[in-house]
Length: 384
Image (cartoon, rainbow, N blue to C red; front, side, top):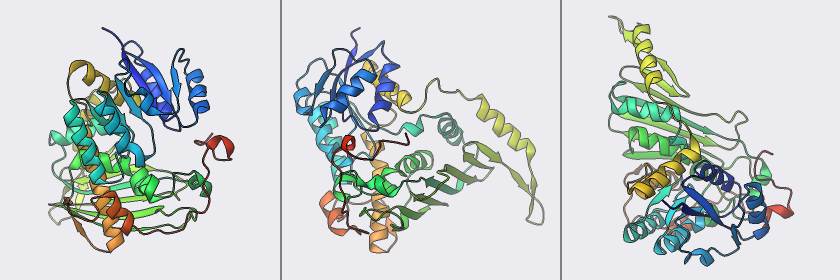
């Protein structure tokens, strides 16, 4: 069987994670094109991954008619995810798009419509689902081992310096779509809704406390209301410890990601005593579930390529990717309007469209510094 041809659109910070995933699947795929507005970046990336004979281009439309390209990874700013996905799906390519899926629900729906019309696969990167703890806990929740979840707390804590937002597309709603809630907490919000479902309402507050070259929020706090359950999601770019963690209190035990379990039983007076037997049983069941041979981006890319080969569906398709965007959109609406927001959001909601959101979002500061090319600035792509 011939290898699947791969193209990477955008050669910035996240592109190497995709290339590493494809490299681990070299027996079934081959990277044949790299595209970036700055071709030198693509050339260096091709050399780093020893991609001999790989096409380098500054314009992704040059690749639309390439019959030897089957799957495209869109590693672009969120503001252009929709157009890129629509173009490549329309050209008969399968598309893997980086998170967040798009800045608005209307753009998500345009992408889903394009996918359905094309008959190809659209998958939204949600690489943290593809890790041992979430996968095992998902199976245990679905199997009813914890009973009903009563309370969930999610912390999406990050640290970014002031010049993080100097890059041209960061720190504006028009290009980035939002701040830490959309672009950082999206990972945890996706896993939360995957594990326990979508809430029926959300109440949020947000602010920008440390990044003056940015319109968008760098701290957000949200309360989620479910039937028979409450949830909390906290996100920031000012936490030096950078912990991303989940806590769940359920009928039979409390548990967490990273994995931890604690169980008690009720005494006649309403207090409790430890229940080590239940803890040991849950811990043993958790340990008995399959581990993953690969995790993160490589695991999700493998999931998508196997779906392409076998004609199945990926774990995270467009409709799954849309759910996180809808919950985050409700958070932005709640913070902006100062009220609790019911879900789902209707198509006539002013926050459904990109234009409607742009007209209403709170701009905490005015972006005054904008660097076009990382190669000409003091900004680096990551911590190194």
